[in-house]
Length: 366
Image (cartoon, rainbow, N blue to C red; front, top):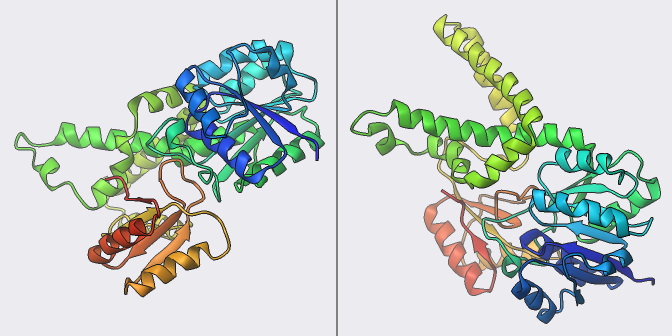
């Protein structure tokens, strides 16, 4: 089998996890990497994940069949001119950013459209850095692929198979589709959560009664407001047009809701809540926003009997499970397996049992 040479620029949580997965699942990959942190490169070499450490503008990038840009967006963009001068004609450059339009437009500008396939692995963690990367972070996670229009079908097919070989679930979209979809299902909810929390703060009484009793549903739907302000500042700047587009639709929906309330349109109000409930209930891995949940997340290798081993372990300890399922979009959740329990005590005991058996367990962020 011919060796595939893969280069990495940036070796943090996502880049490190992709590299680890390649080492685990592929015997044909020779991995080279550059990181601005020398200690990271040493750690990756010592761990046997990377075969060769590169310098920032290393001429050996010209040997690569694939180059993964895994640094911050602006850093990734800054490397494109250098790479465009040295890559071989068959090389595919890809990235892992959560917004695709900006890098695709730069690729088009410098005429790299035959060599670029955008990527967005929908997995992550509040933890960062190579030290927190794992060879199973991508398993059963959606990996959105956004090819440029002039990419050869064979090159796209090969990249899709590469992603699939890492145990991720490839999904091919245009970069415009990706940014529109993520603006609606990820970026808009974060803006809504942030503005809702800010509104409550501004409306609160001098005694802060609203803050005092805010719990349950309010905390559930505003949990993501605790995300990194720096990250979301950058996302809003990078995906401005699509976020503005979905915000327009949401603002119209809010204005319509206000009209219905002001004019006591009770039938229409019922329909608004009923249609929302029906659609919400149809979502995969549905989580109630109103009822108390006892949930934990567990890292799990995708191997025969993996889920059965977890359920058997819990059953042997008389712990009843209410629901269990694999999380495919893990950008803002940790853990592959989501396990829900009927009672808090069962959730606490499950965490103890799983950790004592060397499973890595994560609790939902409050």
